[in-house]
Image 1: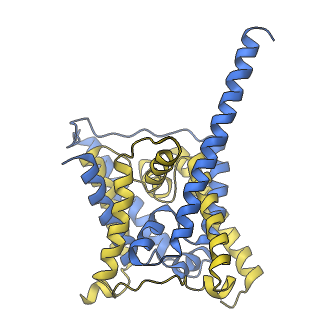
Image 2: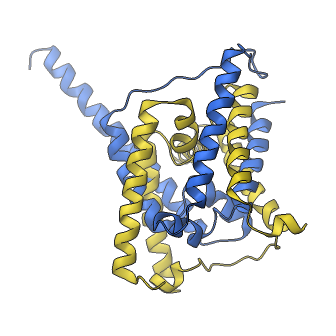
Image 3: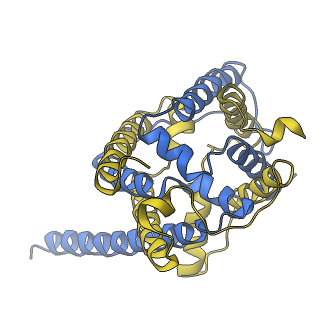
Amino acid sequence: MTLNAIGLLFGAAFGFVLGWARLTDYDVIRNMLLLREPDVFLIMMSAIATAAVGVRTLRALKTKSMVDDSPVNWKGEPPATRHIAGSVLFGLGWSVAATCPGPVAAQLGRGQFAGLFTVVGLLIGIVVCDRLRIRSTAREVQMRDAAAVGL
Amino acid sequence: MEILIARAPWYVAGPVIGILVTLLLWVANKPFGALGGYIEIAEWVRIRRRPGWRTYFTLGIVAGGLLSAILGAGWRPTVGYGSFDQLFGTSLVVKGVILVAAGAFMGAGGRLAGGCTSGHGVCGMSFGSPASLVSTATFMATAIGAAHVIAWLFGRSV
């Protein structure tokens, strides 16, 4: 099976659960963020707990990936400023839209077409972020080059 | 099917998502997360880079959502958005402006932080990645705080 087919299959399973658990509903996420009901927190925590055991078991058994035979593993990342700054922006958007990149795709499938606006916004945000980052990287390189030649 | 019409209880939905994270690592040795598909699509729009498997993952989520409606209470297309409509009105223009802006915050923020609620919040947390822990704590605290401010500004009764 190709990686694309695997992606489609896992996405479909995830989207089905998101829809079935109503994580696609404005009020389910809003009630979570307003701390009115614990269900979404419990979904996240039980998912983390299940996966934490699952992936460590795979790694301990020295499992090989089915696609390319590579040893199953992952890399942690040290926290940086961009994680905090980015997540503040993300949290602000999340609180208003009461949906995030996974559930909003499931919204579209379920016929909740207000989600189209959010998807357009997501793409705009990514493009803007990349444009700004490219510009700032170019400036950094320019300054480094300038420093290197003693300007 | 009766069971699919009612909302899935957390103790079914959560572990199933956890199993999907585990299986994806087993099958493809890839971290689970929804944001990557949008990044690929944005790069295709911006520089015509060919979309990869993460785009298929995101398209799969759309298909899975469709399936959950058909097998559940039925597919009922709408532009209504729950109590969002009571808080901000039913005008599509207002809804569009607010949701596009909110989406842009999530897109830029998620891109900068390198992950979203599924990528950092579930997958990265289960991996025990320090960056995911910091990101998740930050967007959770921010979203919970901001949601309370919105409720205070636009009506607590809804």
